[in-house]
Amino acid sequence: MEWKKTMNHYVEMINSALEGSIEIGEKPNAKVMEAMQYSLFAGGKRLRPVLALAVCDLLGKPVERALPYACALEMIHTYSLIHDDLPAMDDDDTRRGKPTNHKVYGEGIAILAGDGLLNLAFETMIHHALTLDESMDGLKAMQTVADASGVNGMIGGQTADLLNEGKKMDEEMLAYIHRHKTGALITASVKAGAYMAGVDEVEATRWEKIGYALGMAFQIQDDLLDIEGDAAEMGKPVGSDERNEKATYPALYGIEKSRQKVDELTKEVLETLKPYGEKADFLRSLTEALVNRRS
Amino acid sequence: MEWKKTMNHYVEMINSALEGSIEIGEKPNAKVMEAMQYSLFAGGKRLRPVLALAVCDLLGKPVERALPYACALEMIHTYSLIHDDLPAMDDDDTRRGKPTNHKVYGEGIAILAGDGLLNLAFETMIHHALTLDESMDGLKAMQTVADASGVNGMIGGQTADLLNEGKKMDEEMLAYIHRHKTGALITASVKAGAYMAGVDEVEATRWEKIGYALGMAFQIQDDLLDIEGDAAEMGKPVGSDERNEKATYPALYGIEKSRQKVDELTKEVLETLKPYGEKADFLRSLTEALVNRRS
Image (tube, rainbow over all chains, first blue to last red):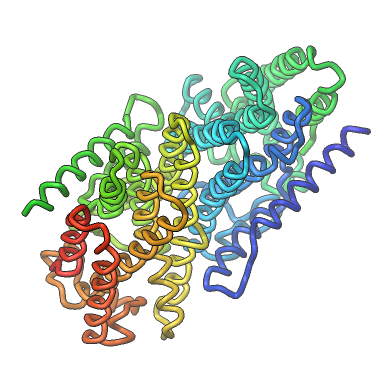
């Protein structure tokens, strides 16, 4: 499968850049750097950064342009997981089969490691934007990421999720949580990649829509896997979301309707990718793999 | 006193801009916005944003240029206090005589409110930089703030502070904590204000040095007040740092030597301000007020 080779190539680029961004020295901040590194390399699929690189690549620009923003997206995703796993939040002991950050480093360092990763995401983007001849593309990509990760994006979604745990939820609230908690950052990954390829606002909006449909499909598929999945494959207790009565699409609409929704959203993504022809082959294959995955 | 009028003017500008940056609606994120607002308006002196405005003003540029960066600095300072007060960190129930964020909103929301403020700081700076004709000044100010608040700045200092609580500390470690935990952000406030006035690297470095000396003087004075202070005036239990065996200058060098150090640093600030003549009157008065304060 050709697309898997491309995937590996992107992932290697991302991992190498992420490794370079954390230099653990002998300084008094070594412990928080170590904690940041631990979670950054705890088995993430790199979906968000891969999307950013893939879109920039498809639009004919060097992926190196999008790489710092791709890394920033992964740092933000990782920090959100560290804070989400804390006892005051979801209180999870393991993630992807490994002890969560606070289980290894203690709660204080885990909080600081999350803060450090969020800050590092912006440091990384800003430093790169300063090297560009035309800094506007960098600023627009940065704005896309910042808006998606803030209180009107991811943090808003986490707030709603936290406050509604154990409560009966209506469609509107579920949609808000999905759109913000996971959807916003995936959408931003796609749109930021497009900005780094120098697109105008019309094309940026088209990519935003693709990102949104892809993010929703991914999230609902994740919810379905949580119900149907296999504990060993997922690396977390199956049905844990249901046990905590968390907001999930299948819990509200049932499994059959959820599968239909994933199909609809997938079709929408594939339809919007059509004009890009062969160049979109990687994104097509990635989309299909994401919605057909078993873990 | 003329300088107090200027101070009030700056503080009003800052408060009004901060108020405008938090719009609490009916949305599911309202609770986290409320928590962010609570701590932003819990009695902070606005030292960091005032410094940014004052330097920009002194250098002859409209303070409005520095205002978004000033607000960002206050947001970052506030988020660091919210996270620092958490049970897993300093475990403080009150700050400036008011219940700490997690005491009012719970730990989960307090963590998210901190995250939200850090993110909002960058949103604010990025949105403003996008409106500038010459975005480089904005990016340089942003870089200054980002570097100061990250793992090689403030978060590094908090890590060292957390890991050394209750331990006997040497000069080197104390210097690291002072320089990073509080010093870095105060230094950045001064330097970012200078960048927004369009200074070159030589002048930016001069302002960085002023900021550094001022930040250190402020921090040591804070440590002295914690020992000597009056509980009612400070709004927190006097000697709480000593009780937790925290890193303080007086604990290592004694009160007399600490006072001398404050004097030396103050002289250094005033000396470096000399070439600016009358225009530096406000900064001179502010510096003297800071090191002579009783609370």
